[in-house]
Amino acid sequence: MAAVASPITSTAYRPHPTEKMKAALWMGTRNIQVGQVAKPTITDPSDAIVHVTHATICGSDLHIYEGELNKAMRKGLIMGHEAIGIVEEVGEKVQRVKVGDRVIILPVIACGKCDYCARQEHSLCDSTNPSKEMEATYGHRLAGIFGSSDLTGGYPGDQAEYCRVPNADLTCVQVPKDVDAKKLLGLADVTATAWHGCELADVGNGDVVGVWGSGPVGLSIQRLAKLRGARKVYAIDKDPHRLKYARDFGMIPIDASNHTDIADYLLSIQPHGLDCGIEASGFRSTNSTKHAAMRSVGLERDSGDTVSAILKATRKGGRVALIGDFFFETHDFPIGMLMEKSITVRGGQLMAQKYLPFLLDLVVNEKYDPSWMFTYEDEFENIAEDYRKFSQHQIPGSLKVCLVTEFGRSQKY
Image 1 (cartoon, rainbow, N blue to C red):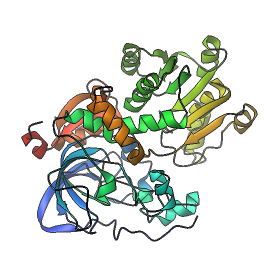
Image 2: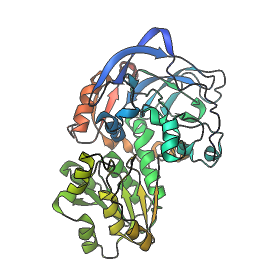
Image 3: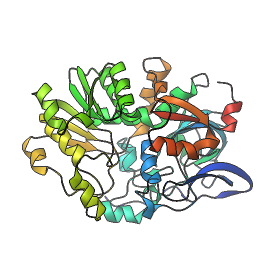
Image 4: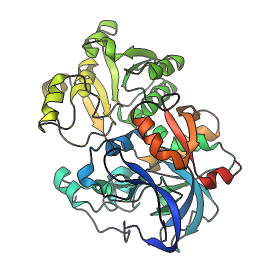
């Protein structure tokens, strides 16, 4: 399908002529700085300006932090795509979102008008990402995403005191003012991404599920899989702290560092294989010296190690979901095993606009509480150091940090 003209007039950061704000700025590999930049203004009548109260760092932000996307980055780009706040200003075409509303800012920016949005496939939106490089590489452009490089539109992120939100009626979700901030912040991306992973793998009643990765997203997938009726959930990781969370949540933890072939081990204890295998560890999760060698000479950028293990451990006719941000290519992919075992593989960015009404109801009605993922709280001004800690698994509690802005510290929720 040919791309259509964007209804959003600009992805550019149009600054306020006088007012300044603090923001987390990408300045190079492992170099995030808190700087004073101009406050954004309305650039399109469908925009809103949100005064951010709480934000956090995502595992996918670390791909940028570690330099994986340097060619698509610009110094000074505002980072981040997980935040909540209060609407301060709206454009003249914004109808649903009102000044003073408390909102979740969704990570994916969608137009709401193209064929993909009509099917609620918002992350595949035709209209909100002007990247010609992505179109040349993938054959199509995907939706715009906040703070995630020029490949996804170059939109300034929301790790800042203010954020310009395009197409605010679709990109902001109004939320109650009496719900704990960490519950809402956990909904912004992690919980929705985890639900998306369960959807892609079609996790259902009685399933045996294996989840590679027990970080915030992986643990969320595990818990939501149980909520959806999974009979047994294996949690695979190397971090002992995260494996303890999995055990405490009722999963079966497996320390991948104790096994030379994790798929063989899984099949030894689950001979039938997994009904669903879900990858939530990312393209940097590797075990083989072969990948390391190919990567060192520039022959490979993404790793097929984890995907190979998942395919081997998944039963014939099973389902596999990939959500860990693969960007490039791998030369070591077991296509024969995929085909011969009749396995269905699906992947993709979250479709937050589709899932949030349901997930918000779960949280508001106290059927699911995502606040557990925030094992540390800090002032937003310390975000540069928190990036370093998160990258090195040094965040207290080993999961996510809840960053509170000066404005957020002044609010009473």
